[in-house]
Length: 248
Length: 269
Image 1 (spheres, each protein chain N blue to C red):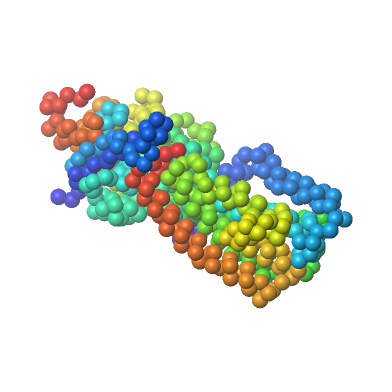
Image 2: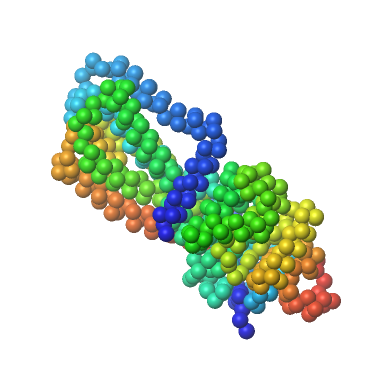
C-alpha cells in the first residue's frame, strides 16, 4: 500500500517551563516534563482525506508541527511522501502545503498578490511560471481584491489566501491545522465545501487535517484518528468507527 | 537560487517599511542627528590639542564620522538578524517562513539583507554629507582599500549577527551578543575616541574586537589614502576574524535551530 504519511511509534516529551523557585532550587536539572505525543502509529493513504480529531490540548498541533519538521520527536519517526522527518526536512517541506488557523501567518502590510509572489520564491516555484501560478490561485480561491492589503481582508479571505499560499508549489500533501478555527459558521462551511470539492475530489490530493469539530471531521474526512492526551484512542474509516467510539 | 530569495526578502522588507510612511521618514531623518551633534562637539574642541588623532589627520569630526559609519554595521547591525527573527516570531509569520523548502540559514541571513543595504546607503550618505556640508576631506581616499575593508567588515558583522540570532532562536529574548557588541564596542572599539587613550588592559582587550581593526583601516584609507599594502596588518586581522567567525556562526546557528526544534520552541516567542 502506498502511504503519503506514515507515523511509527512517535513520541514527543517537552520540558515544562519552570517557575522561579524551581529554577533557583535546581538550576541545571529539569525533571518536569509533559508527554504531548505518546507513541503514535498512523498511516494515511494517498489521495485520502484523513482527520486527526481531538479536544484542545490533545497533542494535534504538536503532531502536525513534528510532521512539518518544526519540532523534533523525542522517539519514533515519520515518513512524509517517503521522506524521513529527521533527515529530509527540506524535501518534506517541498512535499507539503501547511494551512493553519492562525490569521497572522501572512504579511498584513503587503497585498495578497505581494504575499503570494514572496512565498512563491521561497517555495521554489519556477520563476517564469510564478505569475501564471499566482493568477491561477487567485482565481481558484476567488480572491477578489488581490491588490488590497491583507490586513484589510475578512478572516475568510485571509484563510483563502493562506490556502492559496499552501498550493503555490503544487504539493501532493496538504496539512491543515484547524483550518476553520477563526471563521464564522457560514464562512467555515463555504471553505469546507471548497476544500472537499477542490482538494479531495478534483485534485486528488492527500489531505491530513486536525479539528476538534466533529461535524467538520464528518464532512471532510474519509478516515480519521481520535487523539486524546497525546494518544490515539481509535482510528479507521467513518464506517468502522461509527457506533464503536464515543467522542468526548 | 539564493540571490532570488534574498531579493524577495529585500522587496518584502522595503514594501513593509515604506507602508509605514511617517515612520519611514522619521527613521531616515534620525540618521542625521548624530552628524549634527558630533559636528558641534568637534567644533567645541577644535582648538584643543588632540595628539591621539594625529595619525588620522588631527581633526575630531572626520574621525568620529567614520566611527558612526562603522558602528552602524557592528553595534546595531549585529542585532539586526535577531531582531528580525524576533519580529517574525511576534507577528506570527516565522512558522510560514520555516515550513517552506528554503533552508533556515538562507531565511535567517536574508532577513537581514534589507538592513545591510540600508546601512550601506546610510554609510554612503554620511560620507557624502560629511564631505559636502561638514568639511571632511575625502580627496585622498583610497577607494579600493576602503571597499576591501568595508567588505570584510560586513562579513564580520553578519557573522556576529548570525551568532546573535542563534541566541534569539533558543532564548527568544536576552541576546548577549548584541548586548555586548552594542555596548562594549562603543567603548573599546575606538568609535568615539582612539583606543590609544584606553588603559593598557582595556587596550589589549580591544584587539580581540574586529571593529577596532575595521575602524583603524577605514579611517586610514578614507582620510589618509592608505593602500591595501599599507593596511596589511588590519586587513589580515579582519580576514582572520572573518575566517574564524563565519564558520563558527554557521555552526552555532545550526546547533541553536536543532535545540529549538528539540524544545519545540522554534516558532514560539
